[in-house]
Amino acid sequence: MVAIESLPEMTEAEVAAHAEKDSLWCIIDGVVYDLTKFADEHPGGDQVLVEQAGRDATEPFNDVGHSADAKEMAKEYAIGRLKATPGAAKAPAAQSKPAAAGGCGASFKDIMTSPTWTNFLIPTAVGILVFVLYKGVQRLL
Ligand code: HEM
Image (cartoon, rainbow, N blue to C red; front, side, top):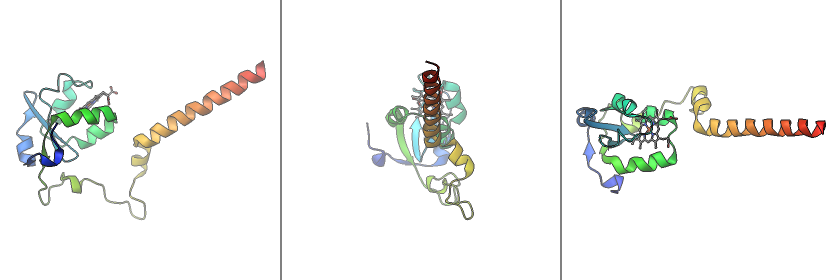
């Protein structure tokens, strides 16, 4: 596996030229991936990858909440780094959303959909439910 930093720089236009199943590149977090061979093995199916072919797939990739294993697996397919083009809306540095006025930067939607939130909230809710059920059963006995 090659270190990301040593990969060649590529432009969005170069990536956009590989927008089909037979030549399927996409950008995730400023790194260019050649997913042509991976598409058939992708646990989420090839269709979702074809939809993102030739584009910046950072948002859909993160929205799925891919596991650490998936992120590790991705490194195998990295072929380049996105060249920061001035003014390009999708350049990695320009991707962070502007801070909400007076807020800390994360919108309510960001917080509600963040994996940290669901990873914390769901187990806590299940824990409370089990505790309440346990206490209820104890009272019956
Ligand atoms: C380098 C790129 C990618 C790799 C290595 C990868 C890998 C994986 C892996 C290992 C899984 C199984 C679940 C997990 O471990 O998280 C998965 C599921 C999935 N992936 Fe990807 N993925 C990639 C890109 C994408 C992209 C660009 C999309 C676009 C939407 C996508 C959509 C999905 C979906 C919808 C699932 C199924 C989730 C589910 O059934 O719960 N993936 N992917």
